[in-house]
Amino acid sequence: MTTVHTSVVVPCFNEDDVIDAFHEELVGTLEPGATAFEICYVDDGSGDGTRARLKELAAADHRVRYTSLSRNFGKESAMLAGLRMARGDVVVLMDADLQHPPHLVPRMLELHSHGYDQVVAQRDRTGEGAVRTLLSQAYYRLVRRSMDVEVVDGAGDFRLLSRRAVEALLTMPESNRFSKGLFSWIGFDTVSFTYTNVRRAAGRSKWGGRRLLEYGIDGLLSFNSRPLRLAIHTGLWLFLSALVYALWIIANVFLDGVDTPGYATLIAAIVGLGGIQLATLGVIGEYVGRIYHESKRRPHYVIRETDESAPAQPDARVREAALSK
Image (cartoon, rainbow, N blue to C red; front, side, top):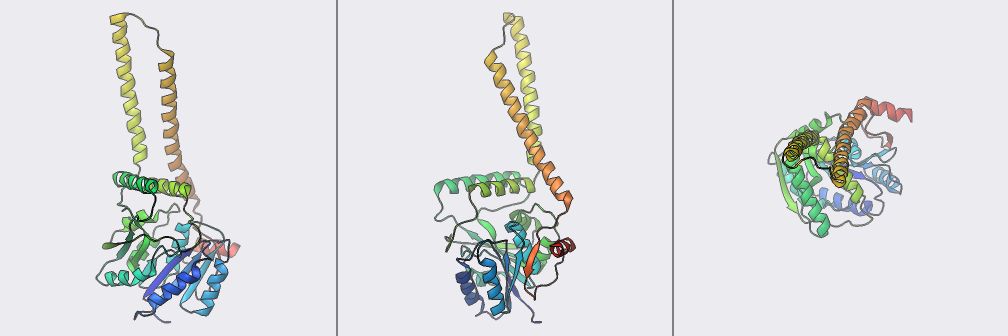
């Protein structure tokens, strides 16, 4: 078997409109290089012709391999499936919509040759709306203050990983995966460079406002317990505020006599405290729900089909789930 130097992992979800253009550009970029490569496509339960097109590409080119999941498990699971497929000494993660320019891959390989285990292509925010840019910057400022790992604005999934970095990622069994945090958590020598943001070549983005919000919340909860501490601090602050208020009332009774409490003040206090309690229970419930989800030990994904050259699934639970279908 030919030794593979570079594996390119490409998660796909309803990318039928752009997959041919992406594949042609990627192969045209990799072929002039002197190293052997493979392209590992992962169809994340697409509802269009993506899976059929990937089968055709794999049949036409031995350097193309594919895995199709039984349904849409999400990009995190698709990336994990691709990392398990990859056989190369280095692995490049990128999207199929051409927002991750294939012509940057040789630059990533060149930087890796200087000894870096992670090479991150960090996009700028050219062409984004003002509101989205403002919200993103605010989110990353919050992340830097609260998370236990460093997550850089613009540093996403488009990156190169050495084999030892990939093996480190594959040792992490959690189901609630937040790859940006995982990439930072494993450490190793990392270098980044910035490129100009590129619009999708075709189709529509799968990341709307709601999905981005949910992904952001996942990131905040996956790598820190500060929301729970915030609940403790809020409770202590409210207790001290109530104590001061009680002392003020007692002092007022001695100075001015008994005064009938205001109805508006009472209602405001009840509503405010009730809201804080519900929010605190929500934070606790989110953590408990994640513990419950992890305790089930379900596989990250189920494979519908894969090309014949794909290696055996290293996760026995995933293998059993695939056979049971």
